[in-house]
Image 1: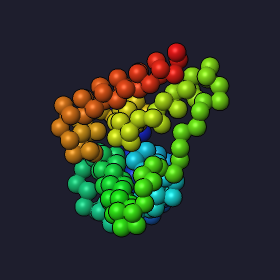
Image 2: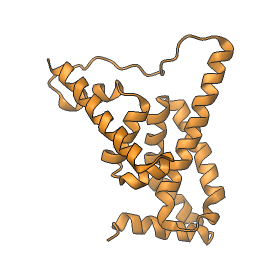
Image 3: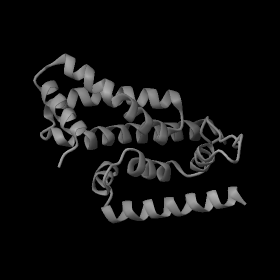
Image 4: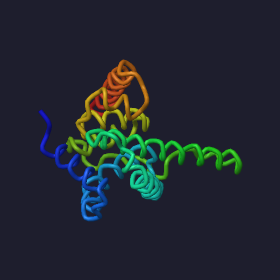
Length: 182
């Protein structure tokens, strides 16, 4: 049984394909925050997340008429954002190689947890220590509630690989949290 939110998104996509600009505005309002969070997880840079999501929306709007199954919108949109972020990462790596810069860390550095008893802050700090790939898999599974098959499609990986990455991400997160709680 489909979730009412998924049905609403499908309906919006169909209306967009019919040229309804109000439906497009609503679709963007509904999906902008989710796609931005995905871009932020992948780039760890606010400006890059903004730029890549803007580029992704251009691609989404241009390709929306060719989307054959409105139910695939979520997977398709996440895939576009993921590819745009990968392009940004490759470009940044090329720029670093050309300039000879040694700093390969993201702009936002983890800061020590202000209060070790605050579970949410402790978890945030632990998540910051994970690689972007592991943060992304955990977030897509637990925050975005995406099924493994959909995550696999978005990342262009076999489902078994996604299961493995999710397992190792949880294992690493557990290790980090145990170290912090000692």
